[in-house]
Length: 202
Image (tube, rainbow, N blue to C red; front, top):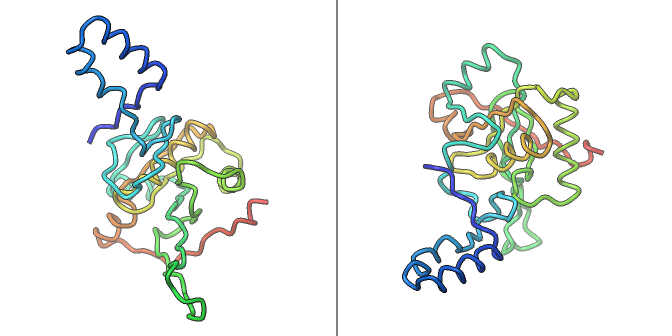
């Protein structure tokens, strides 16, 4: 699947459409589709809705890898594995008097689970949590090889890899889109994980 082209700016689209309408109505009608706004993406290019969906073939400023490639890298390199699966949320319709235990997360052994950093729009607190933990785990080395993953068909790992490379300045970012789904399907081991608490970034 090819990466989705980013929608044009609304103002530019308006001017373009007006010009084409002036020149020839049929041409303007055919080009109107280019100005449609894809509400699944923010203006800055991050995915902000429908996160569980087929993902593109690449990530900006990063390298997409397969399960076999990740296996090989783990044997040769000291990788920093970042799991971005969102933290489970208690169902809204669950009665308050019933005990709720969040499901256990099992991920690739040696990973650090930083939940919720894969959303397209981060609060100031979550942005700081992401930045500070990456800096801490990478020992301040922007060239450290970092692998971001979640589940299969999950845009959150794409968002996180894109942000680390394009906003935070990390230069060796890998994106593993198959995530724990693909890892487990190959019969590879998973380990129980605990989320890095928010306060650890303070």
